Every structure is written in structure tokens, then in C-alpha cells.
Amino acid sequence: MIEIAQGMGIFKKNMFLAEDRILCFELVAKAKDKWVLGYVKPAKGETDVPESAAELIGQRRRWLNGTRRC
Image (tube, rainbow, N blue to C red):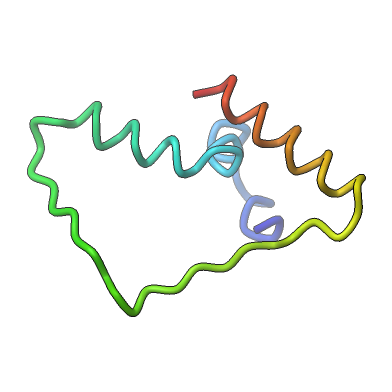
């Protein structure tokens, strides 16, 4: 994700702080648009598990920062 964010401005970089909340906000803000929401059974997700207390604290700090921005 860091490599992707290198060429972006500050506002686009902020999207990485809380991308799930931004997606939900877009769905609510554009309620008059035609949206199709479906379940995709074979979909998979990945996560980076913090391997130390310092990484966990950094992750939680990013989450809190994302909450404040949304």
C-alpha cells in the first residue's frame, strides 16, 4: 500500500486511513444512485497482523486517526 500511495496527494492518502468508512460514506451520500450490493462467496480478504506491541499501537493509532477524519 505504501508503494501505491507514493504518487498521491494528501487527500487521497487519507483514504487509506479508513477506506472501509469512506466506502460506507459514499453509499450513504449517494443514496439516490443505483447501487447493487451482493455477496460474493469465493471472495477472500487479507490482513497484516501486528507482530509486536509497537506495531499494534501504530495500527490502532492509524485506526483512531481514520475515525477522526471520517
